[in-house]
Length: 265
Image (cartoon, rainbow, N blue to C red; front, side, top):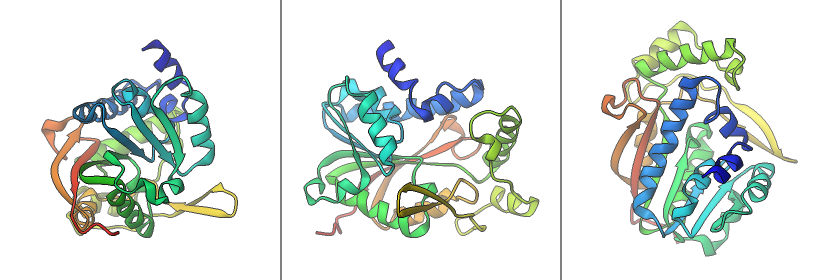
């Protein structure tokens, strides 16, 4: 395990999350990955895809249980770094998400994970990603999606912790988005239809192909659940790290899904 930990420590997200000097941040993100590993366990030995794999942390943690595990990310530099850092781990491969458009990947994967990705997608991109997940998973396969809880009492706790972490100069928290009091209260008491304006940002990961994205502000997992139901049948909804509190004071919500049969050819 020391080899894997050494490889993980070189990842940008792992440094900010699992190895964060703020213990609460490290515990919260560590709980997310522990949940992901538990959910992956029943699929050991089958074909797994991590869509939006980032720095490859999750795949490195479960690589000994899967002979075919693929990580896909839209960032060429991130993907190249994963290929380099995890070259010594058998069974792992990394591709760009655009590479998955090849028809040979249709229905290829028994289980598809997509963690902490869809909240960042603008509406058009989110619909395209969900369509991709539906296309890539095998008939009867499982799609496991996690998104953050950014409504209810959890939002108050998160904003407080983000502010404190930002003042200590920890990670990216110094750049955390600010809420007006009105918008904060609106999202604390949010229902399925509740929405506030979500700022859109731009990053140029690929020259000439700008990417537009959201941060966390204004994301409503209950609204997302409705969109998810268009392509998937949600079998279970789980929460972490405090699952017994459901959406209250939890950080992430997990959807364990089966694809609906209206698969496009």
